[in-house]
Image (cartoon, rainbow, N blue to C red; front, side):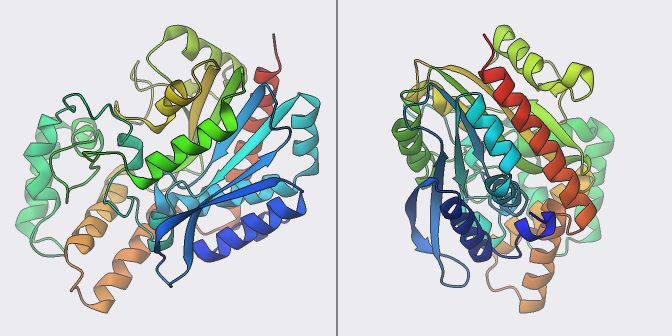
Length: 365
């Protein structure tokens, strides 16, 4: 399949391409409809396609749009894979069933937001809500600066942000903003105070399709961090040295494609809590589990955070003029999807390499 043709310019188009590709491949399809409609009145859903036996003991999950707008990238990878004859033969030969989860967060995908309709970062939402939630004290220091009363920000606001970075450094600023917080429901990287629709629905998917598996691997597709087009392979399991070693053995390509971890400080990501991938331990407890996030770079970190600040401000100010709304949405798209064929080719090539490696890992002793 032509790489360009696998990607789409809207959620509705991406969903149609995915359903068509999975159907043409004879995959078992199931759709979980979202309670709300999309930006253009379209149906929203978490769509699931299984390529392989429902009784397979080896399961590889490939998911998109955990962070909504990042689905423009992830969906393209999934559509391309559905038409990739060599890839599908590789999985079958390894006895691996492949579960494609399209649009974990369809609302954010449709509206070009990173968050769910509850304004929650899905990848901070998998907490035990019966216990005290993590406190991000550093976020308290920057919340009011991040979301000022007007947009674009005043010179004074920008100077205050710059002063914080000068004092604490970019790494501390990134961690303060992105680590996740559970206090400010209108704020950035809000982890929520209860499971979101996407959280509950994903758990149902994992119970339905993963309970029989003895070995599960998961590649979750993301964009935003790192050099443009480079796919950083970020370990996405518990803080366990053995599991990290297995992930590195599977995916590091002999050092050519290193697997990083925020536990040891090697990743561009801040240390996070409430990760979505933890749900496998709850819902598929008998499986050996190995996971990573493929994080494709787009813009420099401060520009990416700037786009997110603008989008959160817009969420708080729906009365903003149409031209402001359009400019911010364009900024969001540029921050999470590079609309060039060269970037798309890089994305597919790196995903495909990691998928082949996952099958080798799952089918190894």
